[in-house]
Length: 321
Image (tube, rainbow, N blue to C red; front, top):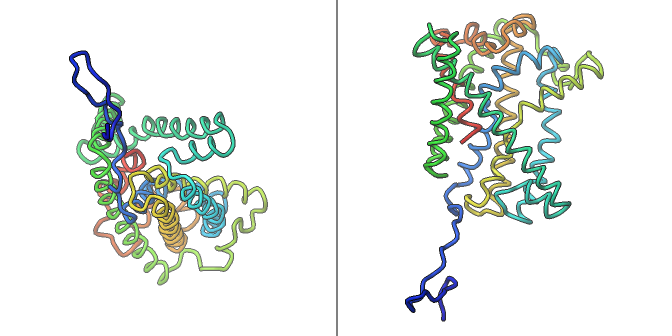
């Protein structure tokens, strides 16, 4: 019998079709959306806010060079992902590629490591977003463990709800949040650069573009470890391959494009930081380094701690959905 599914004869004599296998929604994500999701998965605003001070502490004024140096192997990996995806377009990405090409056990551990990293991040990332939310709506409760835990749990549930709505809703959410962050960070960086050019805290130098500056091998290793963290997450586009248009090409290109956007955003913001802030200021600012850029930049009207929080308090959502 010419039917699309296997059929079986029921007791009553009628033919019933076997359940149709559940598949991912093909062609739901455009190439542009895939690239924006790759950008959002690195949580650029939060990464810059929490890691810039550590990078400057490791390599001094050579932070832009450290980022550029660590981008080289990242682009090599992104090219490898592109060609692996053309070979086997699979939502499992590294799990499927390693399992098929090397060893199933190694493939399992490749997939397991990513799953565990995501789960751990969701748990630990829900707490900062809870603190930031309370800082906006109820500042008096910021130091309350119970309140932070409860709000973090609500954000955790919100992430789950967005995921359950499907890939299209997730892509639209990611697109809106990512564009907001990119525009906000570029505006902050532009203001800081404008101030830094007129009154540079650190005169620009060619040594800014060296991977370790004058710190030697120790600074090089420390800077590389911090700089690599900046790029964590861009490979998410490979996991969307079965839901992306032109699934054998677009996800790989989106990953490369997303990585390029991330690199540009990070380098511009770090250069702005070094032009506008002294090393001691950047180090002391720690996670509030973007606040420091707002304070000295051309956008003083939005220098307000709670307003700043809204730029990067959605970071756990970006990496999770």
